[in-house]
Image (cartoon, rainbow, N blue to C red; front, top):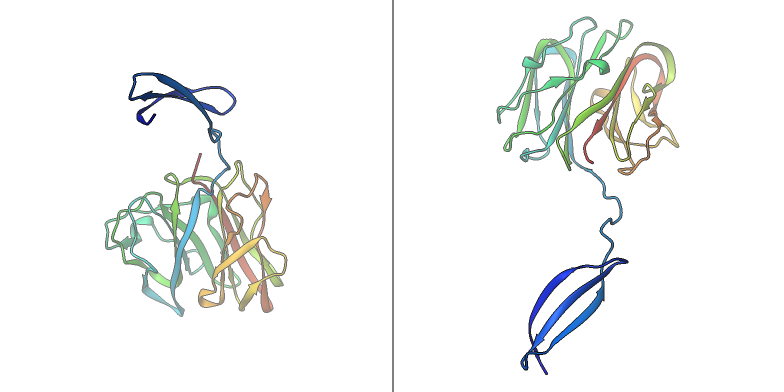
Amino acid sequence: MRAVAVVLLGVLGCGRVGFTVSDRDGSVNELMTDAAPADGPLQPAWQFVATKGASNSNGVATLTVTLGAASVAGQLMVVLVDGPSGKAIAPSAITDNASNTFTEVIGARASSTTSNDTLQVFYTSSANAGATSVVVVGQSLFTVVVWQWTTAKPAMVDTAVGLSDQAKSAIAISPPITTASTGELVLASAIVFNQITGLHTGTAFTNDSLQNANGFAHLTDPLALPGTYQATWDQSGSSAYCSNAVAFIVGQ
């Protein structure tokens, strides 16, 4: 007796799904089958796309970063800018070839008078498609780094911290940052007077760039629980530095 139609009746309790099957002779049979739970495992809300940068140790008025991949609609783009101490730039100083606009994360601003640096973070939470380069204009720019991320939802800043005028040290540490929810995207950066060689052993971050001998990293675990996180980099010698960290909510 061959079934000719299947109609979904509904979802019953305890993961069971009911179907009715109509046979050629008109009889109706009810079948039961196990169904997957409605709530599956928690999925990562972000995915790394690319990090690219441009720099000039002497300082220049314009730095152009060619992106690692053309931007996709809805993508999170984060721009790190390092210029002279006391010479912060406005968001309007950052442009690209897809008409994206950028907002500064004010809480992430940090500086070092000893190393003559001001570190700023800018972002666009839902980028236009087609950007292939980012241009930053300032009085004297040392470093620009651009991160690109795929996110489940447009990013919102949870929290941001800057750490200024840090004394000479053989390591550079980002400020501790405390996340409010599972799976936040945490970025940390350090600008040093010497040279960063890489992340310190045991740090829960992945280093994405050493542009101009500085450190730019993200928290490795895409499902990290709410907590306090801090990146640590090794330097080739002791030097002054400044650093920051930003946590984005990108899901839920």
